[in-house]
Length: 215
Image (cartoon, helix red, strand yellow):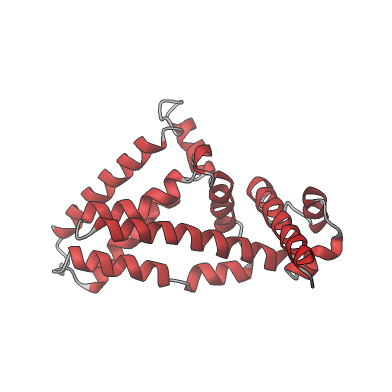
């Protein structure tokens, strides 16, 4: 295959990837057909099978790539955080929250990931339930800044902190807007991140005083 053909092949793959990501973000996995993707990407039907195999494998490929990008950014922030609890939590929470901003260049990816996690295929669900390597990095960072904590309590702290980012989805923000009668600004992502960090720090401080050995 010559260089021109390789480039064209790569371009076709990326066209399919981006078109499918946008459609999945907007409609969910079950709301998108292979023909929808083909039409949006302006490619022929055989291109999906050639480059990805199936719609399900395409979903997995999109999720894996975006998760790698998200976790790469988290790890960069984590390296900058040093031995600082707030810095560790910022590295955990900032990328998934701030990716929602249109100016971030990751807004579609953010919507895709949030929707894929709630409307996943069995294969993606298995990945979500078992892949924890990216979390172990943060567990080790928490252990460094909270050396007196047991492994179990560190895991609980990380588990609950992760929940804050998972609440920042379109569905949950719509519910919040209704609940607050529009008083909560779900567009000010910097303010949302600041609140999430304060909440996480306060929660961890509360856990440190919790009577863990109650009978």
